[in-house]
Image (cartoon, rainbow, N blue to C red; front, top):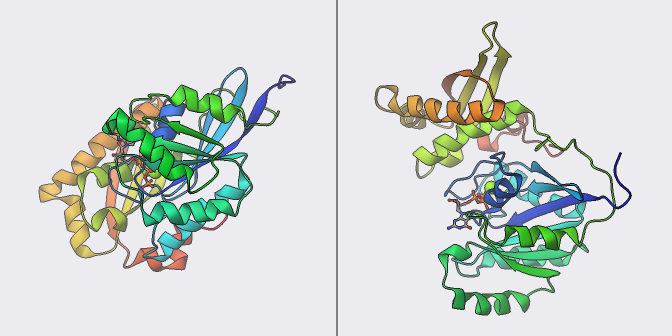
Length: 300
Ligand SMILES: Nc1nc2c(ncn2[C@@H]2O[C@H](COP(=O)(O)OP(=O)(O)OP(=O)(O)O)[C@@H](O)[C@H]2O)c(=O)[nH]1
Ligand SMILES: [Mg+2]
């Protein structure tokens, strides 16, 4: 049973691609549940991360970076992020202080004006800038919107993140503990495992390849010896990309498997056997049926 004064609620994390939304959520939760990379448009779905203390529970919704769409997948990603704004008690609008203010930020601020939810401006990556540079940035953003709070942080090293949580608490209503204290996400393990495989490929490939892959877990079961057997298919859009993912004599795929296995073992807490396959599905990012099959549907 929740205590009378227990506070809880949902909080969206939105912003341009690559500003550090997933890094922030993982930093708060203390475990990697949303994958991160230096490539824009890493996150494709709305990812729940649950933060629980004796006084409050915040369910963070990490969202895809809002960007100029280039495919039906891009449409889905933008829509997912924008719809989330209406489902929450507060919005964290993340901006990257090490990058100049851009049209992408302006577009998102315009969208925020249409929602009544309090918006906290989170100025991220302060570890990358000189302290004197911060004040002019705060002034610049304050002119554009009436932010409920402005909190500079470094999601990467955790600087000032506790202060951000204190600010978020102010906007939470009294409410129940929605999830058990030890639950950090409500995504099926399959989803997180597929994402971890995708993250490794994002780290090891360049140009159009990162955007052209999707990962699907085809089989996941505990074998008699206690080892979890996982079979995953990596979809690409072209034959040439298949070659890149496999690499010289299978070297790249092998490395992806090695690194993903480590992360998945940390997540599941048991030994795993990971089998990876690569398949070509032409132009899957623009095919409604394939997008649905891969879990990109409106109510996801
Ligand atoms: N120096 C520094 N780097 C950061 C910080 N926060 C995030 N990063 C880096 O920024 C890059 C993007 O981080 P993500 O968390 O994947 O960004 P995102 O906003 O979730 O990106 P999308 O999912 O593509 O919208 C990664 O290389 C992170 O390591 C920070 O506070 N300081
Ligand atoms: Mg992300």
